[in-house]
Image (tube, rainbow, N blue to C red):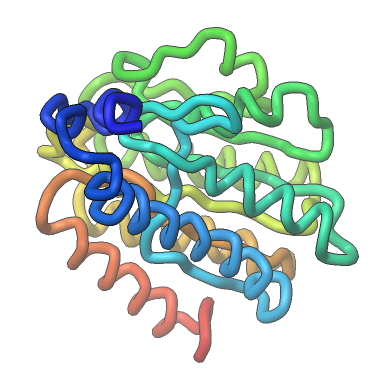
Length: 243
């Protein structure tokens, strides 16, 4: 297990740690986040919205991890809702992390109950051509894309996706690795742009009375935590989420 986890997390020294240490220090926190996504899915159906400040392991599929993702929480949450929650038979994934969400794409490749919209930097990991076949609405961005172009595309395609199919649940993968200066994202979106992006998605969902589950996914700068908090506060101030 230690070698597998070292490969997934891209931290070679993890391979030399005893399994019990890897389980306690690496995998247990990731399992907790994955459980949070599943719980948030049920809460979103019950209350109209839910946010897991974690999760969004969109490079992990049901049979393979990768890209820092060890558990396929998005897949697990959607399958839980399909199997255990009455009235949920269609889901839309809106993946706005800087990277292609190849994990859930592979899992739902032939599942017509799941509509996938993915907006990502075309020049970076994972470049999974096979998984792209599962994307119903694909928006590939150039390196260094900035706010104006990005927000226009997000607004146009979120509206288009939800007009094309009204789902019973939206799973919104809200990665902040689109932030300018992120070492892995390669885009140039401002903090204000991220706040506006989340607002666009929540307005589209709430105006249609579609339950929305948000997970925070990638983001590799210290300031992303503050931006996520600011975005959630903005959603609250606008009345898009409540207590």
